[in-house]
Length: 222
Image 1 (cartoon, rainbow, N blue to C red):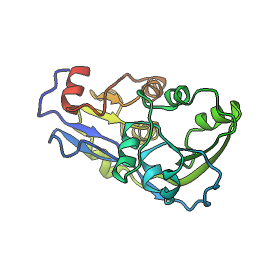
Image 2 (image 1 turned 60 degrees about the vertical axis):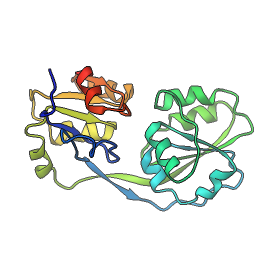
Image 3 (image 1 turned 90 degrees about the horizontal axis):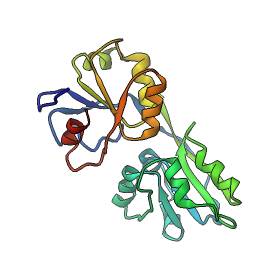
Image 4 (image 1 turned 120 degrees about the vertical axis):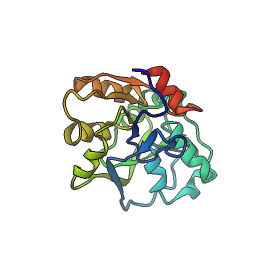
């Protein structure tokens, strides 16, 4: 497919970085974020991991971040922390697998807090426990589907490209919005999401979501 500036591209992220960059890219989230109350952190924590932008937006105890190691799952989460003056370390490639490699296996005597959403990935938690450290999950939000997708579905009638930044949005799209055999191209921000789409029987390509020009990044990928 050859893209031009009149193509219709929809970004399904709840934290879109590009909605104001070009008229060809429209941001339409497929779910909402609902804050959850959580217990106050253990004062003996040595490291804290934020798994998503939503985990940053719904966390309340940032004073602890001034004296411990701070990690972000990916670039968008790191940028969310940067905006509130907190430096964090993030892997070059976003995702649990890369962050596990960054943390390594020498974790004894460290205690981690993992800030995440309800039903979020446990891969990091399991890795930390496996290599001798303590870990506690701080669940500060949940993702909530909309009651009805009729109006949203209509917005996708003439879409050419859909951007996915989570497997949850992908699942919702194919269950509630997608019409079989529609000529839509799918792009995503990580290999994990790409694999999820492949398992559903569709093809997707991974893009650099933080490219200086997202439209050009999509154009050269499709």
